[in-house]
Length: 327
Ligand code: TYM
Image (tube, rainbow, N blue to C red):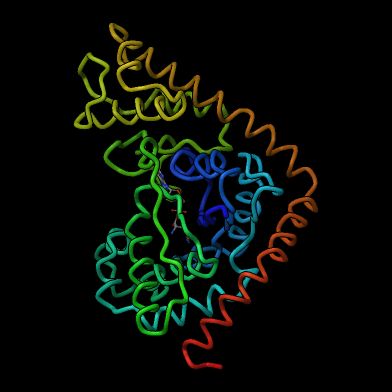
């Protein structure tokens, strides 16, 4: 039996190269060897201030990009979280077995709210239990994510184990799967900050649907340092980030890349990084335009997936409700 994979992305902005290298690209690579479920997690995107019309459009854009990046609908289920209401039902049940202290340890919450903790929505605080529900609902074995989501998947494991101890072996305890290269792409304008959908700045991220000229410009302007040698040195964050992008997209070894760039300057490196990024993104943009020309196609894919997922959801929820004494 193939292992089941579940992962998701928030439609809280435009998909960027970090999301692609840290997640989608790895999902596409493993499509044939796994049983695959991918979600657009729109209920996570309402944990911060948002505009409903923008959310609606971001959801469609993200589904179109999932398909354009190579998530073929006959090899995976692609769906929108809010189309399966059991995500929020299970999230509530899991919230009731999750100690406050576990959520208080989540670094992403602390980073996101900063000093404005008192004003943050409760949903932002309990968000990791919704993420646990997403994963556990499908009896997932593996969760391929970028580095920043590892802590949430580990929390999911803790919640599953606690639930199973208390109520019986209902859940599979999932493993996080983090790629060796590309799991933490940094902002091009500030290589000390993770590339993010919500960061301000025109030249911070590389959007998968950005104009190709803009992508080239953003890479050529990327912040580096004033040294000369082109080597993988994590202490030289800007250079390390560019080299990691190059490594993730070419699949070459670090030593091979260092030899290739020996004696060359940052200008050359940036040009070549831009070439490999554009070579990857250009065909995705072309497929995106084709696929989204017919909006009914996307609706059909989403509806078929929900139909396929329904028996899994019903079976898990039946067991959970019985185990917890609701039936
Ligand atoms: P989100 O929407 O922030 O990010 C989607 C995926 O992209 C990865 N990622 C990155 N990888 C490399 N470099 C970066 N700069 C970078 N930024 C983001 C993330 O690690 C993630 O894999 N909570 C999740 C969404 C979610 C989910 C789930 C994921 C909800 N339920 C269940 C897996 C399983 C999130 O906010 O990801």
